[in-house]
Image (tube, each protein chain N blue to C red):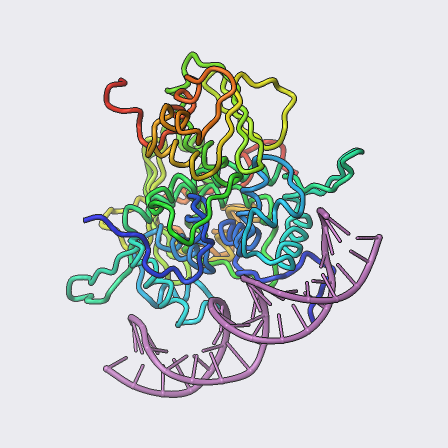
Length: 230
Length: 230
DNA sequence: CGGAATCCTCTTCGATACTG
DNA sequence: CAGTATCGAAGAGGATTCCG
C-alpha cells in the first residue's frame, strides 16, 4: 500500500509550486522548530527533546529521520571521549536561517508578554537574539560574552558590527562571563529591570567588567535605545 | 485599535519565541498556501477552494476565519453588480510576501519536474514567477502582458526593471495578449519548447507583437539566458 | 543512560452530504 | 455560491518499554 523506500510521501500538497514544495518539506508540525534549535549549533537527541516540550519522542525521531532523508540535517558521532551522536544542519538546512529570522521578525507583532502557559527556552531565545541584534549599537564594539543560563552555555561574539552566537563551550576566551536564569535574562533584555539592579539584587552575576552587561542589553533591546541616539 | 493576542489558537507550541509564535499563526496546514494565493489579488471562496485541491471546504472556512481573526486577511464585499465577497490580504498578511518568496526560492532545490500526481495551479505559478523574475532581462523594457490561461486572467507589468503581477482583469491596456493553457505555459518558461514553435503549433495565441513572447520567456526563464544550452 | 520503537487516546484532517 | 454538519482516516501527544 504505502511505498516506504522512496522519499517518504508523508503528506504532500501535490502542487508543482516551489512554495508548496517548501511546505511539503518543512511544513509539518515541529519541523521548523527543530531547525531553529539547530541553528545555534549541533544538538543531541535529548537536547532537542527538552528544547521542544510536548513533541513526544516518537515524533522527534520521525522528524529527525525526515530531515536527514531530505538532507537538511546530518548525524555525526562526536569523537571520544564524548562519543555521543549529535544532529547538525547541512548547508541546505542552514540556508533556512535567514527565513527563520524573517519569520521571527514578522511574528514580533503577535508576541506579547509571555503567557502563563509559555515556556522560555534558552536555545530558542538565543536564536531570537540574532534577529533582534542592532548593528548600530555595536559600532566600534568588539567583545565576547559567555552566558550561563539554566545549565546552558552560550557565547555571543561581537565584532565589526557582526554578531555571532553559539551554544556550547567555545574555545574563545570571553571578555565577560554572565550567569543568570532565563526569566531574569528576559526581564533584562525586555528592560523590565536595569542591569544595575539585576546585579545588586544578585539575580545576575558578572565576572569581568560589570558595565558590559549594559552594553549587552543595548545590543539586543527590543525597543530602540531611545530617541536620544541618532 | 490594536489587535489583542490571538484568542484561541487551536494548537500552540506554548513557547515564548517569535519563531514559534509565527508557526502558531501560519504553521497549520494550508494556511500559508492560502496567503500565497491571495498575494496575486483578492479571491472568492470558490477560487481559494479550487486553488487548494484537497483542502476540504470545512478546513478552508476554518482557516479563513482564523486568518481573519488574526488580522492577516479581511473580507470585503465587492460593489454591485458583482456583489460577491472576496478575501484579501491586510498589510500584516502582505508582509509575508517576501518570506513566501524566499521559501519558494529555497525550495527550488527540491522542485524537480512535475510529478504525475502534481497539479500546476495558475495562481500559484504566477506567485512563483515573481520570485523568478530576472531584472537584468528587463533593463530598458516597458511592456504589459495579459495572459489568459485556463480561465484565469493575469497581467504582468514590466517597467523600470520592476515586475508587477496581478490576477484578474486590470484597467491597464496590455501591449500584448497571450492565450494558452497551463502545461504549455510551463513548457514555454521551462524552455522545453520555443516560443516560435509554440505559436506555430497553435498551442499559444498572441495578439500583438509575436516577438513579445520571446521577451516574456526571457524575463522568467528558470535557467540564465543563453549560456550554452545543455 | 541516551536513543528510539510501541502502544493507546485524542485531535485534526479530508471527503461527502447538506443548508441558507 | 458560500459556507455548515458529519464521519472515517490519519496524525499528534503521552507514557511505557525496549535496545546498546
